[in-house]
Each structure stands twice: as structure tokens, then as C-alpha cells.
Length: 264
Image (cartoon, rainbow, N blue to C red; front, top):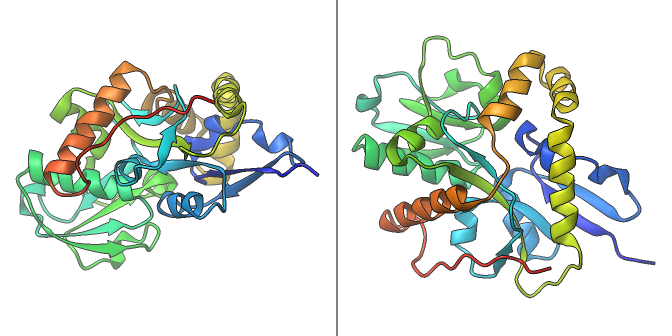
């Protein structure tokens, strides 16, 4: 009996176009859903064969190869990665970071340090979207929760927009990767085809997601078509490398990264 291909993905709306139709092959593919911060460890331990991982994790592990042409990125407003602050941004002294996303945590540190010249006291936090339950000045929330939250007078900072204002480049939140020593025939084409099918089905996905999240169809469609980008072309690679340089300068990633693509 042929071993199933185990694909690790995040459960958020922004990943749905990248995995479209993969659940139609239950005898060949096993979908595993987990928060972004846990998927790299599962890949390292061979619990899964390919994973969508946070960008920052690629910088921290020299054993990954990137599936070409695919990412979860934004150029400007992203909507689903936000800081909610009780105070004017320049007065933030403490911030709670949603521990489910390592990339967004690193991006928060970069934006607050480099753009706002702030070094608040950081703590980890994972209480979904109950921001009123925090005793910090600000809180980072990601994914579907950030889309659903009512800000109730909080000052909000969209980190996708902040990054674009800071660099003029796209921001890459996540990538498909495999282990460099792991050859999986046809994986590049499988995932590229899923992405292309997902983009063609974006209106259907917006309808499904609006029902799941209790958001309007228009909001979901705008998010999937305007806020999120799915390519990993020249501009996205430049944004990815700029993020890496800032991460290195703040001690969030080691030097010496090479961008290695999977050749399967």
C-alpha cells in the first residue's frame, strides 16, 4: 500500500486557495491542520512531508527547500495581522504577542523598533480575540481572529500596511517547504495546480469562509482577492530577503541564509 502524502497547512482563510481540492484524494493525501508555529517542528520530526511554514522559520533552519512560485503575502493592507493598542502607538511600553505566529511576532518587533523606535516589554499570549483580557498596552492578533475582532476604540496598526510604508515591498508571511534531503516527485506541480484551482474558485471559497467565520461574503472576497497575494515572484523574494535582513539586525535570525528552491 502506497504511503499517503502528509500535507501540513494552517486552518486560516488565507491558506484556503493554496490547498483547494487536495482533500479530494483521501487515499493519497492526508491534510493536517495546525497553527503556523507548530508546523515546522512537525516537518522536522517527519510527522508531515510538506508544510506551509512561517517565513521566519525558514531563516532559522538551513534544512528547508522552498516550493517555487507560491506564498502567502501582502502588498499593503493585510487585515489579518494587526496590533491593537489601548494607547497612542508612540506610548506603547508593553505588548502581548499571539504565540501562534512566529513571523508576525518578528514583524511586530521590527516595525515597532525600526519604524516607531520602540522596544516594549514583550510577552506571549494566546487567548483568541479577547483583547480586553490583556493587561499590556498592546496586543498582536493574527489570522481569522484579527478579521473578526471588533476594535472597540483600540488604535489599530495593520502590519502589512506598515511594512509596505516602511520598505515599499510585499511582505511574505508563509511558504510551502520540504526538507532539502526529501525528494517528493511531483510535489511542486501538485501544489502549484492546487493554487491555480483555488484562485479560480475564489468566489466559492469566499462564500464558504463567510459562512464559517460569520463575516460578509464581500469582506471575505476582498480579503482573498485584494489583501492576500499568492505568488512568490521577484518582488516577493525581495520582500522576503528584506525581512531576513531586518530579522538578522535585531538578532531574530542567524546570518548566512540562502534561498533554496525545491527542484522536484
